[in-house]
Image (cartoon, rainbow over all chains, first blue to last red; front, side, top):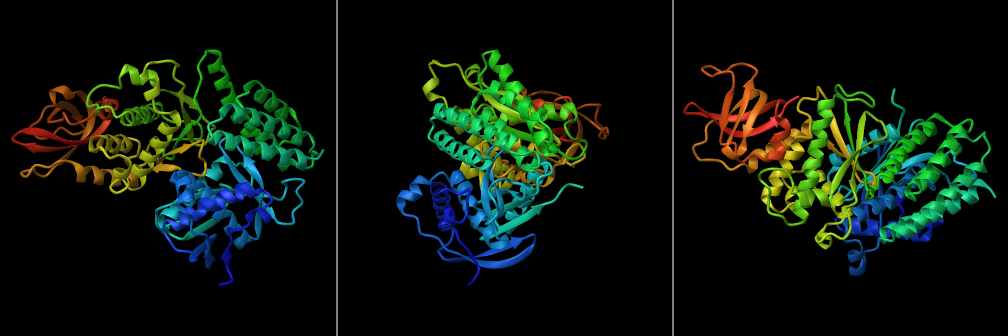
Length: 180
Length: 377
């Protein structure tokens, strides 16, 4: 399969991800994916409703890693960063270029790989979320909630919301349009 | 030095601060957040005015980092300076004003010697009669009471206390955790709940659950009740009595018909990538179905009726409550006296007094036997 959501070596492609951060996110993603599936696995991608299939491969976590990520809330949140950022890379050719500090946590600004790093004028905001359990309906519901949340919080910044359902093997992204 | 260099330095410091925070080293985290804020402010100064979006993002980021460092005076000065600068985009202007509002509140509280633990819980009420930044007072009072009741029940469960059937939480519990209400950045109607840090050196200090644990458990419970109460809640709350209390209290948060409000959302400020917990009319239906399935039944139980009206009074210790129905029932007086209500909980039914309710009851032998009660819009 030519389409691949690549969660390996993300620090070499995404300027906003340092090796420790990319490694942390990848480790969490492996734990979450391994909880439900065997590697490699097929994952459904949905970009503004347009669907496609891709392969997602990961390393089976050992007992130490599983123990370190026994907090499922943390694992889901960090694993979602890895998968959604890798998904945006595959779907849109966009990369995490900066962290976003909002007072309530951090998500990312995304832009073209060759975009100059001396400003954020051409970037978009990426809001990420993840679900462990849950089916397609749950993932879609979460995406709509995230879109509503971004719309409320971001004023006139263009943004994209992305949600991964680990059990559902579904990664959905959607542009957040201005409320009319 | 360019914006890129300052901003990159700020990002590295913010990541280190976050890691320190996760390791529980809050003092180091605060110091690193402070340094990150200074770098971000320097990044703002390095930007030309023809980059409005970058200026706006950087300004908000600098003040947010300063807020996280708990240096509220510096954060306020920074916000004023950025607001006074020319060409700031509208989104940044709004977000800086929201941050200022939060800063004023925490600074004032600190002057009074009140300290708050990290981890706001944001609650927003949307749709129906709720408009941006304003909502009917009684609606908000009810929801605030509901959130507070779930917090206290969570504390009691974490402490392994016997299930409380009557009255409010003990003085000891109240002194451990005191929830405060804050105005939150506007968006429909929002408020934030934050825990006051308890006084030190109490005898029960070592048994006290950490605020972080409390907030996490609070969210686990709400998420389970809002998404799959029948299957997920038993994994989070093993005690059936606590489970019943959480189901009832959560149901009170959800709208009935969506006329006054359409949904209530709860989210954690410290875990923004986690889902928002949403209570809508469909949530209420699911909670009703779960509550019906767990209610003990008698073999000879008859068909229930619904009585809609105003809850005028109750004495749960004496097993009764009284409702003034919208339409007088045949052969009944102005008020309906309903018995066998002793299983209802004070913190579930108490806030409904003098408000509209729907009581499910069985009419048997001229008496009304209580089955269930829920608020009605």
